[in-house]
Length: 271
Image 1 (cartoon, rainbow, N blue to C red):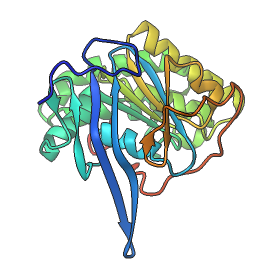
Image 2: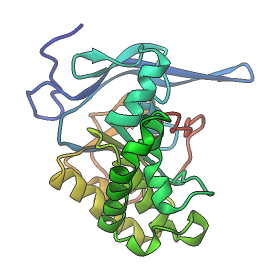
Image 3: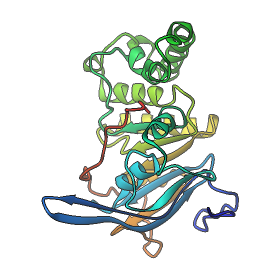
């Protein structure tokens, strides 16, 4: 175990809340191996809003998913505080994704048969046993309704995803992601499927959660204007963090691309 770890790129000397150490990841398909991450050291500090940018195939989403325990590195490790988490048993990683981590994705991943409030309730339902749920349901429902109100969706609480716009679905997904009061929110292209207005609304919500709730946010994005409005921007290039290239000017957009093997199956522990 390493102690006294600091991330020189952040300018913060306190221990990070989440870090990757010498992380490597290779995907294999049809006899072809593609090394996506080639020894990445990366840290996020409590209360930071960090964006990860880079060209298509640079490993952005892969790094995000490894740090959120949606996937496992081939080498290296992921640490939450002073505890290594990538090597935990599956049940423990599920609990992390249900309580400590929250997730939102480009394509929302709402359950189509559930209403907005039922989707938001899902993480709390998963965290409860069949015996606990009757005692938790009232308070959980009250919180879910309050979160939807905070997202400006009180009028949509009993609508299903097919009855909502893309922006409304993403706001519902954000409410679901913070239902269990996580410490870290992972956002993988959260505005990539939205128009400019809806995307700006989502970004404002993420900034509010970061500043008002002190929620640590780690976001992958191709939108350089949005990335420039986060506390820190990290660029990945060819599977490594690139500190040599200048940041793309504000307002420039990198080409959108859905990376292979993104593992967007998030919710065994319903993030």
